[in-house]
Image 1 (tube, one colour):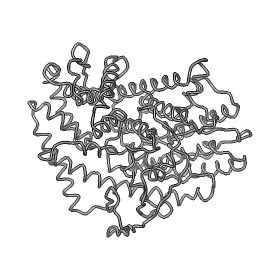
Image 2 (cartoon, one colour; image 1 turned 30 degrees about the vertical axis):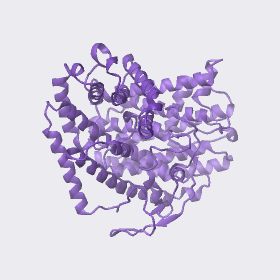
Image 3 (cartoon, rainbow, N blue to C red; image 1 turned 180 degrees about the vertical axis):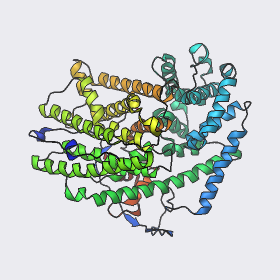
Image 4 (cartoon, rainbow, N blue to C red; image 1 turned 90 degrees about the vertical axis):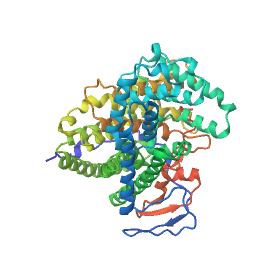
Length: 584
């Protein structure tokens, strides 16, 4: 039987000085949850939905339970693409690469892991020796990227360099830039390739037509490796050429997959909303923010590759909710009495929720994760307390010390430790938690620095938040804000390289592909979540996440809101407060 967590493990004692405590941003996009919305209810029942609005939403909403006909057709399409993959021979190098890339970009690679691995292994053995001599820049770069992300050892090109005489075509430069995103530390040629390709592409932007310019700008800002495919596939489908053969089948399957995903995710968000309402913390404590869509966005994105992981996504969302709630203890300005009441209420709910998650993992996988989950929560609370003392004293710590503590206060360790145990890695896999801590550390650093970089750019910050940028400038007197920002951007890039090595290096002694994909998805969501444009919008996420605006959190009833784009973002995440993006 899984061990139980006692109240003493989590209870925090507060004393004095909390009116001066600033705020942090664990897994956060914005601070206010409100939106102007006109609600049109849809009653959800076994028989389907009965909409009452006069206008249709931009993306189709589907019943929470798909009819048998849809399920049968969906499986047939999956098998049709599988047959195409199995039929490809070694002579179809370019088409094999394009096919595998297309499957990945529409977020369907999890259905074909074995077939894709077989194709790439054959291509690696048969084509690696001659690939660079006979194919164009696009094909060479795509070949490199696909094999690298599947763990095959492959260099950056002929004599260690991409050949500059192949650099005249836009399509090739885009793929070169995409390939460079999979670099690891020490691969300076890929750093040069990223700089070289992005520079030439930006130079060409004024000469492009508007549609092409928008597409290229989007790819530079959000390369495929640093996005979540199932959330960003619409743009790829719009640009995807081919209306016959496997292209047509893949497009149809992607649209069906989109519809299925909407149904699954809406149903899960209903469950999360009902849990939150039944928990009663919002009514009990006026300081609590009501943001189930924001919490669920993270768990959905982290575990988006497998629709069958509904129980895991719902459980993970509950844990993410408590990361935000514990942060509220330190984030708000309140009296000691208010903070004490708040803490006691959160402690009890956290105990019950964590014990329930641990017991479910024990029943499903035969593992007892309680001690590890308990330790992650204790570390989070201690890190918040350390940060609170720094902010209350007004004395900024050294940048390195701030970052070590700040990685913990993002909540990434808590979340990914939960993911580690929620996924079925087997009894042997579960003993390797310590081996994935470097991977978790890279994700946490990317999140912390991205968050702090956004805050540093926010002219509305009041100056008492504390950030890595401030601490770094304190350590390096005379350094300009722009120079400090450059250092942060370079550090984020370095952590991406470390993350690539952890995820794609076959020499890694512990291979847990599902967990690595989940952790990588967590990192991929960071630039998407912080990618506000000049109009305070999240253009990449607006449409795929518009389904979250259709849940009435108070009742759990499916509804449709008539929202302008910026209002939709506000409804899901709260009004944006981060101005600009480090990824432009």
